[in-house]
Length: 325
Length: 277
Image 1 (cartoon, rainbow over the protein chains, first blue to last red):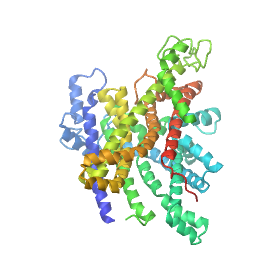
Image 2: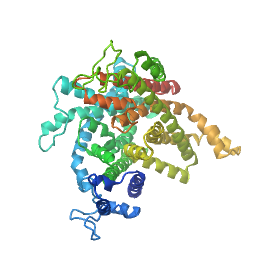
Image 3: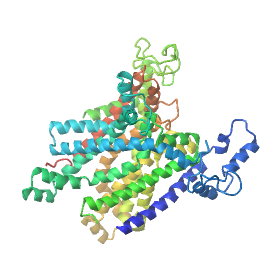
């Protein structure tokens, strides 16, 4: 157990190096000089060279890569800059010179609010619909719920989002205009602003989860241990919840770990549709303005999340299924 | 059955997109009706049968029906080719990793892990910036996002197949690894590959549409469904057709491919979904 964790942590550290190095090499080959974009049009070559120097762009690639971890030398005295610079602060944005870590931490509450609510919704609906459909397979109820799930799997999130905005904001004014309210400032506003985004994000996932839960339940149902549980006289309820639902949750746990890890990029479309300023839309902004430190920061965060949640899943397995060691 | 019908229909529409343009007389990027088909405020006008705008116009007065037909070409072309590419790469990596095991497996599996944890959007933009946004680049970007999933599934299957008696038999007869992989492992993967392939098609179509929606797809004025829907969102209050027409085309296409995939799975794996509780 301890060894698994240690081995995974080792991999995590390696992943950080690989991902950041990859991001750097990717953007080294991308045309477009960030120093040129940072200055107003018509700046003298001297100014541009100066800015480039301050951004650390005149140093060799490997130094720039290391700079990423402790911030560029802005003043020019050979030290990493600023009192804010407790390494690693992920460097400074090319666009507004803010520490990348601060920018990301500023945006994180939005993405976490969106993700947390959506996860609760999709687990609630996905699992309950999947279980109910599996309990009464090939009945009308099963067919209708699986039909809805199929539409959910096929539904583009942005289409659903636009449709919901049209219906519930523009046609009938149930929900406020798309935007975000901080939870600490206005809890009711926070929730009402987020209901449509939550639903949009959760619908696709809930649909996929209900389909997987259903087929996983039906698969487990034909196992011998279920037959044994039934023949030793357990009630239907006991058999289903103790012997079918638990092992049937295995593929769901795998998917959940991966989906939560990937949610930073998975929520981008919803963030854009509803104009939420989360980490996802930050990444898109940085991408379109060639703001390398911000891009590298968000990519790093996204990759770390995937690795961490995969680790969680591996640790959860033995608890769910005693056969896994 | 309905799904196959719709797939055939949308494919025909995609192939015959120029014919659609010929029939209503409006090429996809035709700006001649820019003033007739927009209001004084520059808002797009809805369906107008007299001018042969059967599905309305967009904000530049371009024919929405023609553009949706041309969008079908992009969606299907990228969706299908990227699926094929992802199947090829994923299958090759998965079979080799699962069959050979050992260090090869470790390297391949770790590569898959890294790719899976790398946000696809970043890669899409970086590649676009370097090579420009062409059809081929989009196909590669989309395939890059989905091949790891196929590689994982195929590797799992290959791990099972390599322990089967017929593989042991082939090996004891002196068959080389390449020969066993090609002649014994691959043929036994065809069933699952057909199923996963058909289920990946709608995923890839959705991915292409999402990239286009975010402005990371083929550049304008190319008609893509995602781009058209992004345009439509700006005018949703007045021009419902700008969302309804490409939106329903996209939804029906992905829905049909999903239905087809489900049907194939039920047909090729008779055990799936047949249990009772």
